[in-house]
Amino acid sequence: MDWTLEVVVVPVSDLDRSKRFYEEQLGFKVDHDTTFNEDTRVLQLTPPGSGCSIVMGKGIVKGEPGTLKGVQLVVSDLEKARAQLVERGVEVGEIVRMNEADGGSFIFFDDPDGNSWAVQEIKARATGGEWK
Image 1 (cartoon, rainbow, N blue to C red):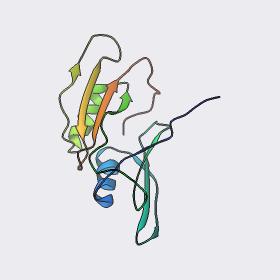
Image 2 (tube, rainbow, N blue to C red):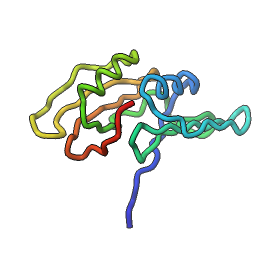
Image 3 (cartoon, rainbow, N blue to C red):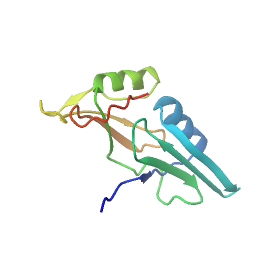
Image 4 (cartoon, rainbow, N blue to C red):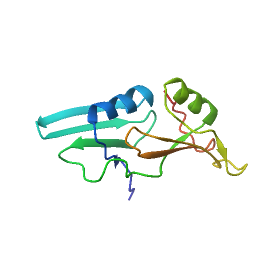
């Protein structure tokens, strides 16, 4: 039996600001943005090439904004991914090379609420999807 990770919940304080950041600056695809009533809204976005989405919402998501730490995205070309993030106005750190082995290089950034993300370069496991 496969156990697939399909959704990571991201606690945010402002859904519209977060939607702009993840869609426009990171290039995530908006899968749906559904308002059920004035107290309940669900927003789901997916990174390019990923089988796992992120969900944020009003009235459904528990957790304090900015408390998500350490979620990793994987790309095949870290320099290209970093250049695209910088071009889109994301405040991203320099490339950190922890070792020379494949999988040993990272960049880090935060969303507007302080949720922390890592981007890891793994050339051997890359899906071939472009970081858009």
